Image 1 (tube, rainbow, N blue to C red):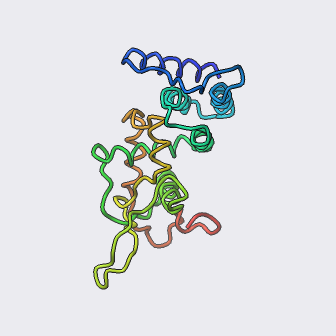
Image 2: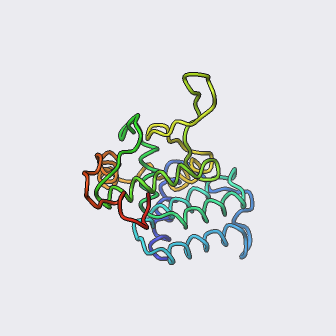
Image 3: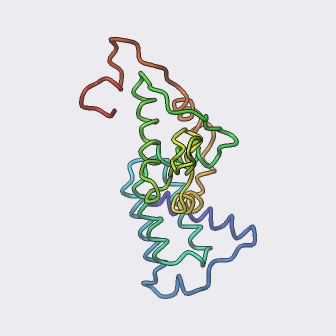
Length: 210
């Protein structure tokens, strides 16, 4: 809790140095204002998280909401609940989609992988995109070449943010995750080849993910 408080304080100070001002719409008015409850919620989210690398980005969430009068109570609570439930891997995957110029996604279907680490990373990104409009990522809509029927681009490059995903990504400033943290995950997304006959890789172990 102390760590996220320090991170949020540093982010708030940086915004003030840049000339930004705290919201004055009553967000922080009163001892039990929504602003105070939201800050308390961020602290508890940090306390419940076992992934310490999430802390700076929870701090960013608090700082950005404190400077954005366009973010109402319901939207702020949604962003907090969503951020609390995301793993560090999921935060990094969102950052990769955000930084497609630096980490271009290939225009191809996901390759099968024989290693568990690559299988886990690829599976998580696919699950996030498969949630559609109700999640943070979705496959881009497109048309079939033959009859022009609506369908989806299910290649890696066809994954894009939903409005909810862009909100959470921007408030947490996930684009600032260091490239050194993203590069290993990106490499795992690109890895893989058809499994050799007779091997028991992640695709072939019964009772696990397909």
